[in-house]
Amino acid sequence: MSLPATMRAIAISAPGGPEVLHMRDTPVPQPGPGEILIRIAAAGVNRPDALQRAGAYNPPPGASPLPGLECAGHVAALGEGVAQWAVGDAVCALLPGGGYADYAVTHQNHALPVPAGLSMVQAAGLCETLFTVWINVFDRGRLRAGESFLVHGGSSGIGTTAIQLARLFGARVFATAGSGEKCEACLSLGAHRAINYRSEDFVQVIKDETEGRGVDLVLDMVGGDYINRNLKALALDGRLSMIAHLTGKTAEVNFSAVMARRITITGSTLRPRSIAYKAEVAEALRREVWPLIEAGRLTPLVDSTFPLENAAAAHERMESAAHIGKIILSVEL
Image (cartoon, rainbow, N blue to C red; front, side, top):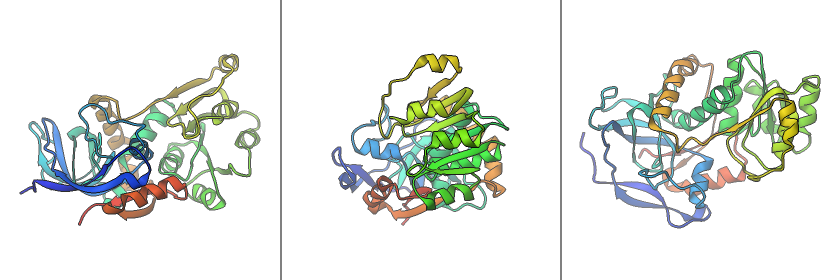
């Protein structure tokens, strides 16, 4: 396959709001040993992209400075030693960066086949979300069948995926969201109870719904004053898994209560993790989750699609918090 020398890409001109995202021509990246080059058809838009745009989340050493942490497309070129993919294969992939472009490079073990029955737009929003949910709900969060689970931001890309996957793995799911429409979406995806955080106290609702026991796991991306409220909503031996802190990084916590109730507080970020660790997660997803997607039991929810050149509008949509599901950039010409 003949490759062009340059490609379209969305670059960050300076730290700031969505308006700092601009289209430019840049060299097509070349895959190194163990890497594949993907001709991107669609790319997912995620909160870390907005943090990077604002200057608050720098790429790891060696990663593309362009935003974009997941994509779907076709393998365009192979680096030395790549054996599991061929040029032309349809893949979706976790990226170290660079997804807002015509082409991007990633490690061969961080790509997965596009599930049968999904469009490229649907597949583009799978990897960053599913890697995050798998790590923080099932690996670090240790959610098991028969347990109860609360996810905040239930109508987000993370939330809509976590609701479905936790339910499929046998958990009783609760979700918070900020409107009646969003709560209805959470219920339609399998939540036992959706809590409108603008009009209800999620701690009290959880206590009422669980007869005072609390939930076994909370997945939180809010932070701030939610941290202590999450602890109050947990059962004995409960776990709090933190993946973001949209309203604040700090809280004053009474650790006597944490000790007395044997609570585990954990958290993680995905982008800096090792190539080997991400490969292990990809293999777990291929084994445990891909069959559910291909059977139609887990469906990625797409809120809206924007052309690549309208990346700023996609970020405005995300930061408005009006979306339900994933926001996707359509990259293919």
